[in-house]
Length: 196
Image (cartoon, rainbow, N blue to C red):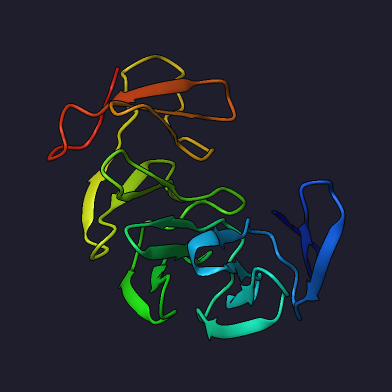
């Protein structure tokens, strides 16, 4: 099954592209949904910060939770938690099972219209408003590391703008709108990445 969000609508399509169900939410959706196949549900957040859990099979509303702020970045699922980033920079993670708040962080949310991703160890990472990648522990939300792209080059603008992409167990890639592409290497699980 494929889940698509457009405007106020969450749409489920089967393998052949036929529509299975449509659920209308009260506000626009700018973030990608999180599909929890093992729990037969879809979790969606709209721009008002309302998280809605829907039945994967029917689209019926199972639960709702207010995050208390605007959300335009996509969440990620890891270690049993779904991390959501508000536009003010705050991160709120909820339990994928109970939908209760698991932890919060005052910073580390993805830039608007980007998303969280996960590291090889399962922690959450995003390009924050500062333009640096910030990594938070998936279990507690504790700050783990922040990237730096200061290379000492003339006319170099170091902030990144896009969602980091983790490639394999040791690498992360991220870029900027002015054409810089950075490769970071994870030396081990205890330390953050460094730019190559």
